[in-house]
Length: 357
Image (cartoon, rainbow, N blue to C red):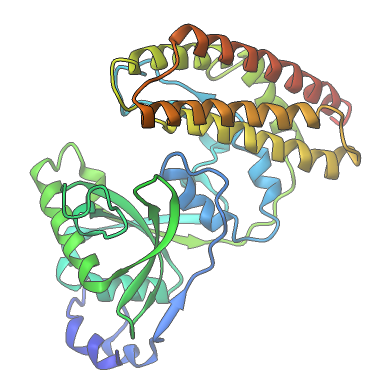
């Protein structure tokens, strides 16, 4: 594809991020922005942002100073859109709204439907990562719903190839894996236009989906925030603020019992709890290397705990496949034993960290 494609297609002078038409002579045939491997993929807000963060050098200090607290809204589990998640604690939040690694901007996608492909290409040329809502019906790697159901879902774009006429994207496949994939320009435009039609039907309810979210990566070299880590760990264990850890696990028991009436469980809360333990293990290893300068003996217990929650997640997955889940009493007993182990590990970690304050 040559620059003539852009000359013929783009015709929207109001779009601030698009340069003059003459500038399209300089557009590359292909561009891919750097992405890393996100350690959390359970809910879309995390892997999109963390794909940017983990592509940055020295991101570990910030990552392990955050993503500690989890919370559960009072509507859970009766309202399925209210879930267990990492807690959004204002200026200390690990979400992209407050991230030092990406500045978020947004524009109304309804206003550039005609020129959406060229606009997206130019955003990427200018170094912006993009989150956008597309209709899964037209996305081939969403095999469960491809040409089956019309559902708008977010997709994360980080590159394009104008010769192959594709966008490079990150998104969930039919197995809920967060993968690198490609969609053609035509598939993208069809999915975008269809999603906009769906969103317009209930614009008040899904108003945020009409926007295109742009993320400008930022250089950040932050130190590990020991005081914040101690504060958040203490809050997680002792409920000095935010949500009490035990309430989250009690809610998960209620959720499990509630889900037993269905054949397929929503796996995401169990996936997130495993990721929480996995990141906690990585945090302890980081602290051991960079703060303690030694390997702590309870690192073995933290590895076991991570495997315990992985086992719990896999038990639920297996139940979904076999259409037969373990009894609620057994699930609660397993969870209680894991929580007791977690409390011991984190209290030992806190005890060691207080020495360095």
